[in-house]
Image (cartoon, rainbow, N blue to C red; front, side, top):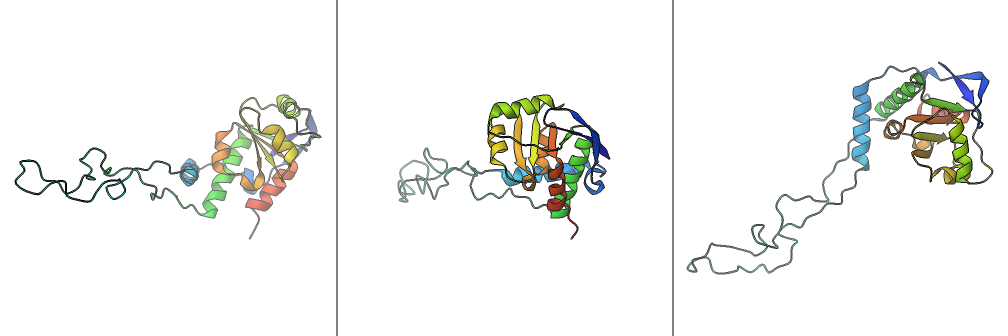
Length: 211
């Protein structure tokens, strides 16, 4: 598959680039993509809800009153869940594990499927290069405005560039990410993928290098 190459001014170059078949020519399997996306969401989940059970709440362990002869119901502890300020039964705990294991092969296959889908739907924009002299948000906004990407955008860099990262971090519906951190969940979260020629090479070397 061949796609056009754009420069930073939004002009389409006369030359085009052939996308690697092993990455961008893969048949979509929605079930696999969904499985990987759900696993990645589960692995990102932070457990913050926590309730105290009867062993954790404050209160004496002494029996409130004797078992028989008072006319009242029998109780063994004021920390019982049926008492006010007692422990919570079956409440959320921090020891719950939501993590899901997905094999490397499945993750890479799903990643290539989403990348191929971006290319086929013309939501993949390839730049010859991306460079900024200063970490100015306005400069990054001008570049993105000239590209045919009207919507949320994920910009992929081949290596860390603080100038571009700082320039793009405050732009609405736009995220700048490194190739090595690319995953299915982020690709699905943005409409357009903006990538440089060097990033395509880095993508192939990072995820799809023959072992």
